[in-house]
Length: 151
Image (cartoon, rainbow, N blue to C red; front, side, top):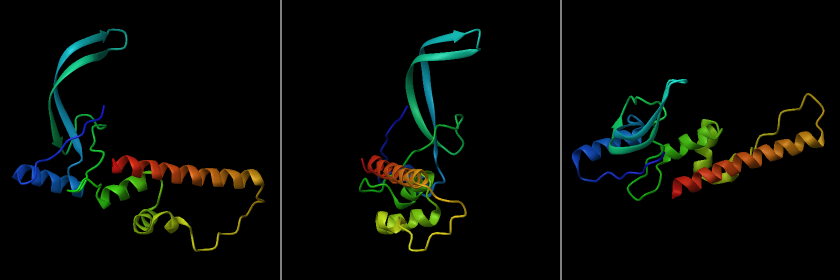
């Protein structure tokens, strides 16, 4: 499940929440709901919630469900902030240095100026093809994430 929200600028609590969200100090959510339709599986001991009525969403520091995290915070003009973009790039597999360089210079920053380290084992065409494929997949994933954050 995904939700989007907007904080009203000029409201003290919203301004404070926004500052905490941008700094990463506030990064989780909690929900309040009423069960409309459920089914308890006695064999597994799992209660399946088929339908709920959502009453509220709250920003919290420690969520009851560890997966209830804030996925992104945009700046006033609707653009993801630089810290958020760096976090996404690091989660995509870039080092801190690579993420900062990418944000400053784009894809050209990821092309290493340093000579490659000598390879200890013989390199064949399959190894080269796999390395190229892995790099293209990594760059494609980064581009997809940037497109998603830009929406």
